[in-house]
Figure (tube, one colour):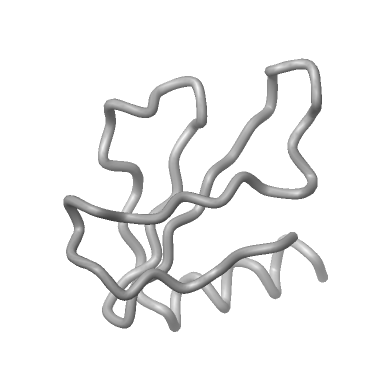
Length: 67
């Protein structure tokens, strides 16, 4: 999965679509990373703020999911 790191406030998050998301519009996940948190959302629900995780919990989740 490809992600980048945003440096701006939560109102100006830079969202990155997962490289593993389907190309036909379903199963799409977007991630926004700041220095404080990682946000994850359904790309079809862009008006929502997304789930908020710490860097540590996000790293643990990715390790488990890819394990």
